[in-house]
Amino acid sequence: MIDLRSDTVTRPTPAMMQAMFSAPVGDDVFKDDPTVNALEAKAAALFGMEAAIFCPSGTMTNQVSIKVHTRPGDEVICHKLSHVYYYEGGGIAFNSGASVCLLEGDHGRITAEDVEAHINPDDIHRPVSRLVSVENTMNKGGGAIYDFNELQKIGAVCKANGLGYHLDGARLFNALVETNETPLQYGKLFDSISICLSKGLGAPVGSLLLGSKTFIKQASRVRKVMGGGMRQSGILAAAGIYALDNHIERLKEDHERARTIGVELSNLPYVDEVYPTQTNILVFKLNNKMNDSLLIRKLAEHDIHGMIFSPQTIRFVTHLDFTDDMMQKTISVLRSLA
Ligand SMILES: *Cc1c(COP(=O)(O)O)cnc(C)c1O
Image 1 (cartoon, rainbow, N blue to C red):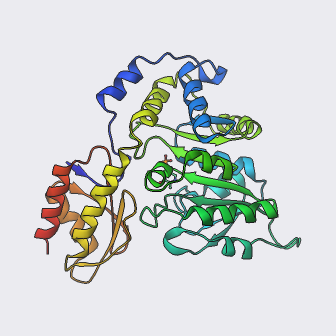
Image 2: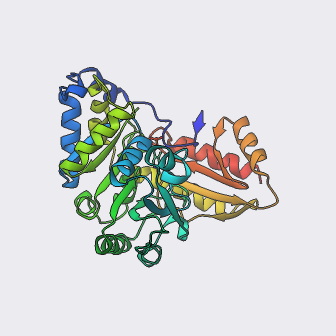
């Protein structure tokens, strides 16, 4: 099976499994799990942030963060296609009772100018602007990478206006391996950062939320309320430590394979447009020579699986379990459908 639906479909490698089997564990709700503690300390140090907390999912790290940053009625500024708004089941309203201000922007990226223009004045009619959330890389934007200068400018706007600044960095490492920026620079810029271990990094479960000591203390209370306090979760954290040690640099291979398929796609008669392929997400639009569900069905006949992202728009995501041979097969099947 060639599974390009998401980079979440990877299975733990034998070496990762070994790390999980041999991990020392304890009850993490009592802060007694040495492996969870080690993962949290490792991630905090990597980003130069004071503390981190391990959660079951990226949705939870984002939602916990938003809950800590806001009070009911406050407003969160983000792109209209951002994961925190578009793919988290209305969690901003459900968990935090917060309002949203949805911005447009190139391939899912917002600008400092636009953020500044949408901060509400001190007027009792208007929600209080409280938090800006950005996503890097941007899933709906086809894995687009932010220009770090723009992120810094947005940070300056947040500071000047007393707004919190959150990064949904589910795929931040995909951006970092393609640019010259470091985790430390990101740690310095943001009040809170969420990173996923179960996407391109290949761990079976888990995400981390990073922030100041005070922030993470509040986050651990919210995580507990949401039912995310786990016990011998060191078994999962061990996979995360292994992923941070071994699976970051190789993300470049995933990007290379996505680019190669992207170039092929742009030459096919049924493809209208391929989004710029900066990382491991490949998004392309079909013209009237091909129907979206027909393409998905035809690919499935060859046991190749992709996803309809929006009408006539397809998403492929490359990952740890997608090899060069699979790439060649995918390319020849795509060609054969022309
Ligand atoms: C996958 C993802 C998340 C979190 O997803 P979970 O499935 O809850 O772990 C958050 N943000 C982005 C951009 C994502 O792609």
